[in-house]
Length: 426
Image (cartoon, rainbow, N blue to C red):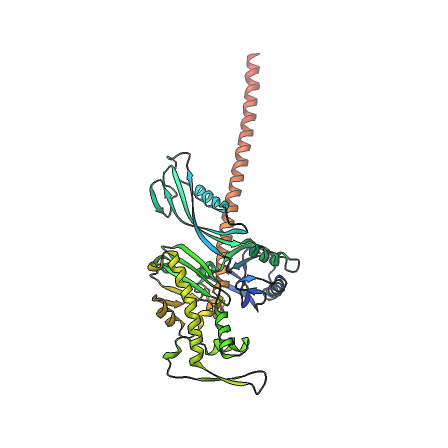
């Protein structure tokens, strides 16, 4: 299966498995998908290996059945509070300053970053170029073709906990599932690929994906990733607060949040009372939408506070000219856009996948599919890079073989020349 990408979004509330492709028009077609309610994943991390393995097996089996495709490799999203980012640089003294800098040098410099020493039990997930320095020239975007004796690369590095990464691999590599992991992709990078446009990335924007267990974010400025973070709580804590505050079940609290949940409830002239019936028919209670809104506002304000803290930490808070783009299921609360603008002082919009082909169906053009669709988009990008690398290696092999043959042919010519030369002298 070379043409199609298979992606798995391991979410705290749902697991989405889908297959898609890039069309000739440059858009992305989602062919088939299958989703299940998630168990065994807490705040973005796999905690119950058995439960998650069973869910992945069921999901991929159903996808094979629905699509008719056989596949053995997948791209998978990763989040969780163990994710952290840092900025690092590496310097290289060049052999000849009069020779132009090549793409091979740039690639080799980036590859060196994967050898940077991490904390025990951590490994690098992504090395993302930010800028380069050539001698005393700073913040260069494209150094290829320049001259200089010293080349420095500046990178944004995303790091994850090895144990959290290994448990995902165990789920996929188990005899029940038997899949190979193509690559783990940080979920906010995937969401950003599906939701943001180039102008926003240039102007300065924060992409915030409010999921069930985590709130993931990535900050862009001047088309460069400047910061990324995973905040270890999301929409599920809103549900829990409704459950505890109204003394109702988790299931009922989730339904109320989805159907009646809103921010800025005090702006509404209506104060509707919701009649809730428990399992016992005599167990009835009424919940005010005003009270419900106050519960939601308090927790969403906490989430926004954590987002603003990360933005301040990035050093680009004052450069968010395109504001904040919110996506994920947690962004669908009524009045949330206005609430976010009020609390952050930045303009906001609710983002959904925008690069889908017309025949993908409106079903996937929703904020809660941003990560899954983005994983397909990133998968296509990585496959393109992989193919280009393979072509380069094959080209180098052919050139090497050609050189060997040419050298061997020259040896034969030289030997024949020596024979005739020797005969002439006898």
